[in-house]
Each structure stands twice: as structure tokens, then as C-alpha cells.
Image (cartoon, rainbow, N blue to C red):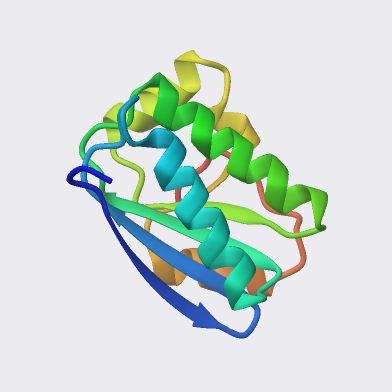
Length: 126
């Protein structure tokens, strides 16, 4: 994996993966594989992907996020994005994908959100 780094924290009900670096076409599949493996190894139902250190996420990276979302949902879990930069939020919105994701401003907010039963609005930071 090029200049993308992952930091994983597992805490009972969810796994938090902080991604740092640009997620582009060269690294998107590997990032997806490593995030999915970290989530599966942690045994948690839910996944928080902290993107606060991701300055760029191209279409391949966005597609990887969607595949991760679908994988987590198939098991009855929730994937919450945290720290989404305005540029990435715009790209997700333009692609019609922002509404697919639960989005929080920080990883701590995302962890708190997955503790609650689902019922919040998707695609809103808060």
C-alpha cells in the first residue's frame, strides 16, 4: 500500500479504522481489503471509518467505501463515516452516495452513534 496508513481500534461493539493518506485507484482495493480484514478480525458488529486524515478519495476510493458498506450491512452491522472532508462529502453527494452513509464529524461521535438503535438521518454530519 503506497502512502496510505491504517490504525485500528477494536472496542466491543465496533471497530474503528482511521485511514491516513490519499485513497486513489492504486490503493483503493488494498485499503478496502485491509479495512474489511480489520473489521472481521475484531469481531465487532459495526465499523467506523475515520477519514479525517484523508485529503483525497477518488472514484475508486468511493467505490471501495460503498463495497465496505454493503459488506457490513449484509451482516446486520452499520458502517459510519467520520471526519469526512467537505470535498469528499461533495463528491459523495454529486455521485448520489452521501445518503447511503451515516456520517459523523468525529470518530467519537460515530462510536456513540452505533451504540444507539438506528433511526438517525444518513448523510448528515453531527
